[in-house]
Image (tube, rainbow, N blue to C red; front, top):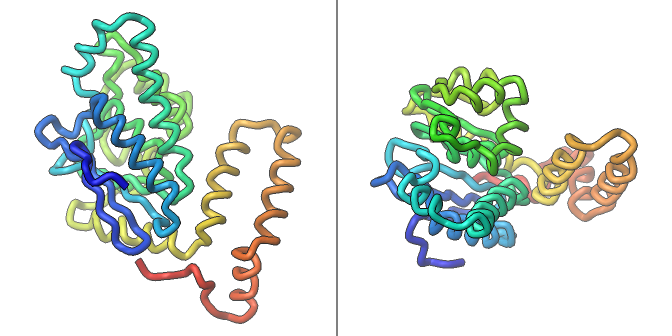
Length: 264
């Protein structure tokens, strides 16, 4: 795993990796460098069998202000084909975060804007401080939240997207929870404790089962019943017959913890 990230900080402690967007001088806004480093670290963590939970957060008192406007200004001068290539790099990074075969938690320590909302939406669950503010302001800049839209729409739904995508208005953490964007709202001093609660919940689950279930959610949520019957049957058959599945059933009947259930 690269030790030369300039826009990210990565810490590993046992089965938990903590990934921090580390550009506090620009409110953790992302540019092409951060996008490339996020793609790299996501690939590394996805292939690391010692990591079971990934926590994503921001340095300082901001989660992320979204895209770096100086970078966006530069990109605006690209040709159409160059713009497409650049946008695809971001879209592929987002997809890799969404498909990461680990449990992912967004630890939202402050303002979360634009592409920051997209990063949160790729995570399995999200915990935010009460004072966090959210907005999708792309429309106010004459653009659209295009690359993040598949993930944000899955979280908040089409009705709320018509509101927040098309107005760019700011909403608070309680509203973000109400519309499904995040899972928990806590006072600032409880943010780490609540994040740890989620970490422990995920560590009780089978790691391979988490990976398979994430793929299952993605497949089933966008398929017809007819399309997914074979897929769901093969998924459960493979898990039931796997070493992890057999261990889970054995532990249940023997009234003990399965061998993957560890304290983080």
